[in-house]
Length: 235
Image (cartoon, rainbow, N blue to C red; front, top):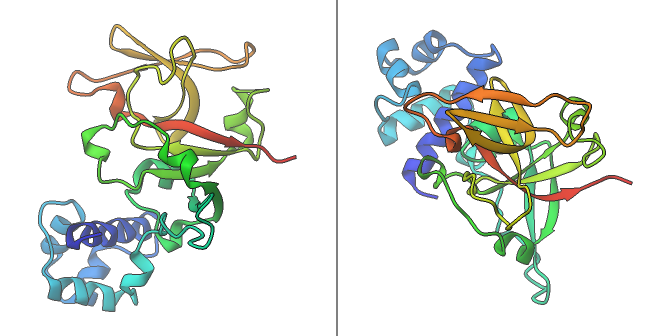
């Protein structure tokens, strides 16, 4: 974690509050005594805030640095050297798609995963996501599960490796399951790419294949949130 990451965490938290309707750029400018253009440029990543400016924004929103820090993925069981565990935060689909780090306010629950299971995963990151927190999990809802039944059921926890954004098969001759951003939704699908379109394939034959166009200046990795590397189903 460095100053740049902290700066970005604050920006993302402010945008989350604006999206929820509990804050506006105008209100934030009034609270901090900054020009509205200055706040707008900060929220749109066109300029940075000074240390003093960060302090003013934190104070105005009653935020502390501790509240912005991501969940520590290295906080495993230090006393169990044989099989250390790491904490993976379970977040909303939106947070998994849009948030570089899981902040305390975005964590719904946490789960313990063997550190070796996480560390053994190979990465193929989109350079834009290289600084993002690597492993986050979502709890699969009924709509996400419907296309992947019986492979996935509602309530399944899917751990996403957000540093695997490539369509290169993870294992030879086996389809790779991805979390894919499709509009405002996070879909869990097998994915192919042909003639400028992503082909989102369900597991259930009763569910249709979906086609998603990729812009001329975009690549499939811009839409791939991550590879599903672990599935945990409730009994």
